[in-house]
Image (cartoon, rainbow, N blue to C red; front, top):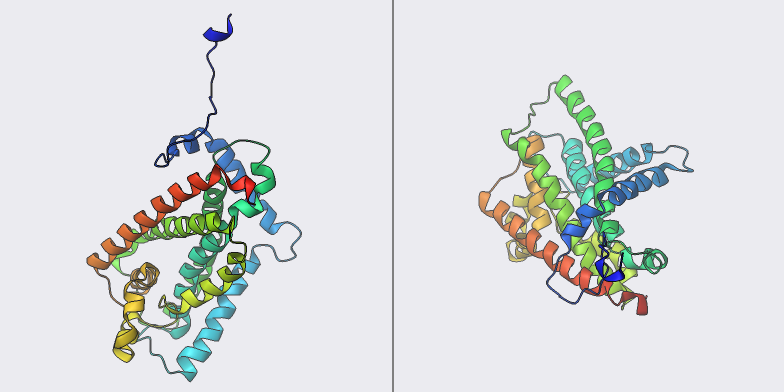
Length: 286
């Protein structure tokens, strides 16, 4: 057979178009994606004494500290919902977003040696992180359900809202938002290394303006002049919606849900475009 008549299974060529998303390639490499998800899960537990128990200790300790500081000392009220359960629900949801964001924001720097040796769609790396973090979220939700049952057993008047069926959609929104922001930051880190040191601080600061440890209405009542900071923060609505779904407390607005979805879509596709563009030349700067 002549060389001109050969049919190739895949053809690797330069990606010149900025607005090409290359999502079809992700499906072609789905087996690699699942392999990386499995690797992420296994390596987290490898050479640890307590394994996945670490995932349970962190939200429990954080919830206890938040309950003591913000509810007992600062006097923040949570209505009929026990403050510890209120904080545990918020932290469980926040941990998934923050882990996706911080881990994916270092994609190019962490995988530079691998990216320089073999070709595959680079987005598979951060995408595998977002998917593997679902296991951590699931484990933390189990501990939340355990305390939920305990408070029901001792007679607390709590119940989930019927909108809880939308909770998986909320998880998808969180994952896409964390992935989009992570890809943008990861692309910037290839040129500005000092951004790596600001990520942890920035995420911690973002937690306090995302209504994690207080009701969304509280900041509007106490500090109406600064409430705009939260009003433009999609994570604040995700946290509030999650408490509404899981604990039937707070408020749920179709308008703010639509706003959150639109902002998430814009950030995700912007991050994907920037990530794909950086992929072509990052090896020269990392």
